[in-house]
Image (cartoon, rainbow, N blue to C red):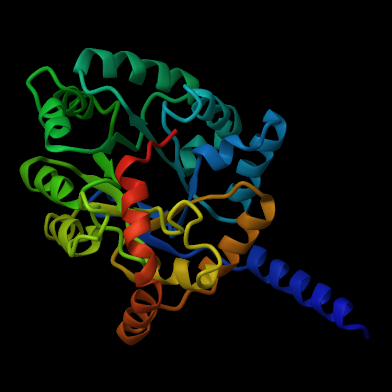
Length: 310
């Protein structure tokens, strides 16, 4: 038998095993829900499926492979991602944990977007609504103002339109730590990868702080559900170590799930197979990977300081 034939059969067998085996799940903070340890990111990578039928088909495949956590936002294509997600989920909406994110800081403006998000996603509630991409202390002040988005979301939570209120961040772990300490968030999502994204200093050098050391302990102490994003650092860590290492590192942290963008079906299949075979890293392995990737931290910090999710 040829080598290529053996590789093909091995890949086929692994795919069949992955499809047949269950997706691991974890209890998500105090939400009362269990979620798949891989979440489907519906941002720019999802929007790279230019054909709507193709985009809907990949969500159906994700569902069939056991993914139950879907992460969208109004900012992803000005509602296009939400529209596709709504069409794809259909009657299976009840089987998933659905998240969207709001860019507006004013409560009235955010409410108008939320009303549209409900229609686009064809749902009467979201399992979580995140305040999208917290940046600076001034941004936090706008969010927490009396007429800000946070108070509006609290009201929507009381009305069960929003079951859980969250905030996402990849810019400044100190500001996120402040937000999590001050406010009644149920969940949070932030950058957690093996290069340990922190905050860029003005001189471009990495800070000593990171989301992992600053924000994560607060979230855990307050029993929030945590999801990890940017684990590939927007592809900047691709090729620096294996995909398996990057996913395993972030899943070894005390998070509910890693949120992954999957612009090709083969990425979806690979990520699901890694999740289904997941074994946690030892602390020695994690420290070794941190050291291996440390040279990339400064450039990654600088990139994410100004990066806009869209």
